[in-house]
Amino acid sequence: MPLPEKLHLPISRRMFVSGAATVAASPLLVTPEGGHIRIPSHMGEKLPAGLFTLGVASGDPLPDGVVLWTRLAPAPLTGGGMPDKPVAVEWEIAEDDRFRRGRRRGVTTADPRLGHSVHVDVRGLRPDAEYHYRFRAGKQISPAGRTRTAPAARSRPHHLRFAFASCQDYQAGFYTAYQHLANEDLAFVAFLGDYIYEGARNPNAARHHEGTGEPYSLEQYRNRHAQYKTDADLQAAHAAFPWIVTFDDHELDNNWADEVPQDPALQTPEAFRARRIAAFQAYYEHMPLRRTSLPSGLDIQVYRRLRFGSLASLHVVDTRQYRSDQPATLEAAQDPSLTMTGAEQERWLVDGLESAGSRWNLLANQVMWASNDRKAGPEQVFDFDNWDGYRVQRRRLLERFGAGRVSNPVVLTGDRHCTWACDLRPDFDDPSSPIVGAEITGTSITSGGNPDTAAFHATYDPIMADSPHWRYIDNQRGYVVCDVTATRMVSSLRLVDTVWAPSASVRTAAEFVVEAGRPGITAVTQEQATARAASRWAGPVYDVHDDEDAFPLRR
Ligand code: FE
Ligand code: CA
Image (cartoon, rainbow, N blue to C red; front, side):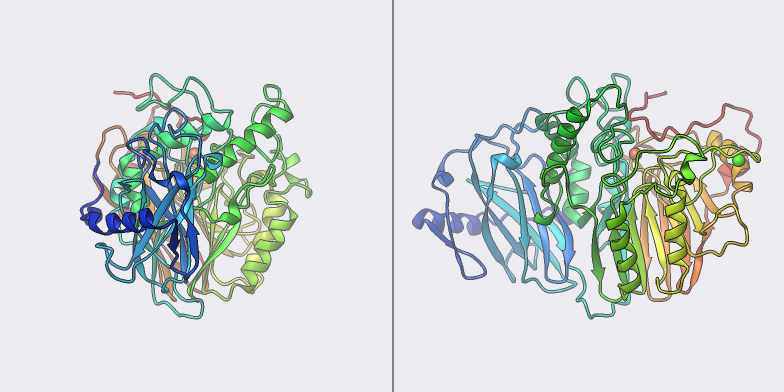
């Protein structure tokens, strides 16, 4: 798919050509800040064609700045294809899409040690303003992207509109959801994890992963990320808005926890640590993250907070790097020493929630907080990779939500490949436990493929009858758009009719309403037909497939 029409910009070669002339005439380039940058001597050397195969992106908007990203990769699936030396990359940002007004520019270096990725932390921008940006390396000019800064810290915005998305298994289908997301009117996109999947090529899948197996080395993770980034719909979604990203498990290994892999019998601790380092470096190289997220040793700093004036704070959490290994039984899940976040991040989260001074406190989160029993009747069966496995810490945090100092907490969640709108209570088994917040678990871009909706409702509607905190469930593909004002937050479930064809239509299947000052969520359902049909279902039990990485096409 081409970029959306509004992003088809007439490339002003004249301007970049004049910039090149300046570079050729002088070894120094004047930066917007008035300093000088020495242009590397190989600036004029011939570079391979097709440097910008991975598109452009921006991220982590601040009131005065944003991160601009690209990676030079003329051979994206085979190591990148760049010469093993640093390359100067010019960047340019302007208020208009013809790059005439308020133009700022500079030069950065695409370093082979970071896969020739580029992360420019542009500052000095105006708050709550749209900008357009692009890059140049040698004579090649990147596609242009559009981005937006955050509102000023002391401002009181009336409205914030953003989307959140998760779980984009390339093999499970086409990114039809991003075709529509790219045309929404959004301040940002929050991506909640499973940006890549580490699974090996599945010959029966909708599309095929590169390579012959799971990635382990830096080059293998680079190739996997690069393959995802070559998708035109994903590129369009990145080029349309700044993204605020966090990862879950599949960016490294299914269900990993800190230094423990999915299958400790098959990956030694040393090998898994090396794998983690490689995966995090490739993740940083491909994401529009600030330099503060540059990996160091085994770790990458991803939990962080972004603020949108007094209206909302977005607390981005990391529930993988610091967590205890998953418990195996419900009894083990009651162990008070188990942690999903680590003690330091828990303090950071609680302090931030209580002192944010924001009307809304939104969590960009990976796995479900709300209790999610998977068996009808009195017996309860849980996936302990979710917060159900870390229930003492969950209760402690939800009690903070309800203690009067956290303003309007709403947890935004990925991972589940289904939609689950829930009330949050410190004790989900006690109907007298107060409602202290809301959670929206928001479907997936592709993971799970085209769903069997009737089987899903036949399996889960009876469990819903035992789970009064579940307010809406669904298993179709898409994303969620959230409209936030001082008085309420309305989240629209946007669903596509297929991910097994290159394009699809989109519709709003339901709206979830959270009123400020009244914890809990109400689902305004627009589609009832599937649930009614499911009451007559006599087919197989629906398998949620949370952990699978590829889905055979069934025709
Ligand atoms: Fe996933
Ligand atoms: Ca049950």
